[in-house]
Image (cartoon, rainbow, N blue to C red; front, side, top):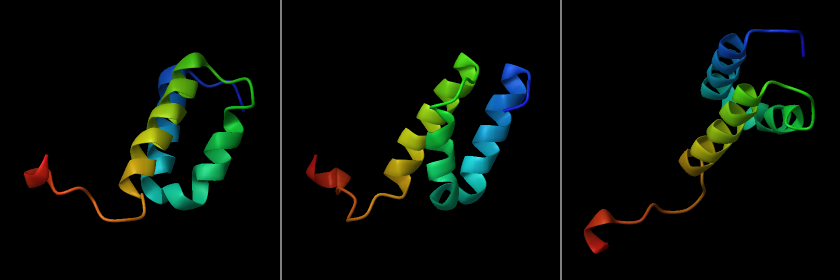
Amino acid sequence: MPELPQTLGRMVVAAAAQENFTTLRPDLAALLEREVPDGVVQQIHDDIRIRSRTFAVGPRPDPSHA
């Protein structure tokens, strides 16, 4: 990965995940095995966690039964 400011790297990761997460998820996960700034690593982890929930298969829990 080219040298990018941490904030720009986080923005690129967030935008990529938002645009096409299902296609890019393996690429985002592969970035975790490379040397990237800590903030970018955290952004990748956050996006994978959040978007994995969003794209989870199966019914969502009914909040009225909580």
